[in-house]
Length: 165
Image (cartoon, rainbow, N blue to C red; front, top):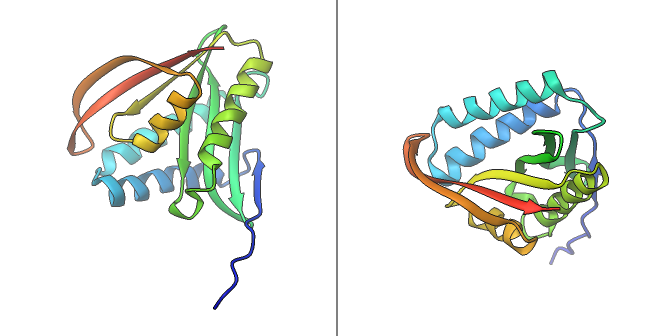
């Protein structure tokens, strides 16, 4: 019987090549797990490109999570306005799930936003992403808008969540 070694989890900043990995993981994971088409990957690529073009380390922050030296997750805080931060592109690979890493990444985002003096954090997600929604709800985010739409080859429900910091 094999002995499972403890996982070594590290969080680090963004490095060249990471954003391509983030886009790829969104495309592959959401296609495999939810049947979403390449429209979703294109949207994530647009978000990623915009973030890279406008990234201001004074107000924005990126985390890449590694498990035993391999990328397994990401989360980003971007400045939406003077007082509002937005949580973007939180994702975990299947290998990283169940380790509390989604919660840890979200907490890092919240700590950063509070430290920068943001008064509110917002995010947009889909109703079928129950694990992410649970993480947000446990941290005090509230659902402020829910709207059905056709996207990524599916019928979905988009949601806007907010948290007063």
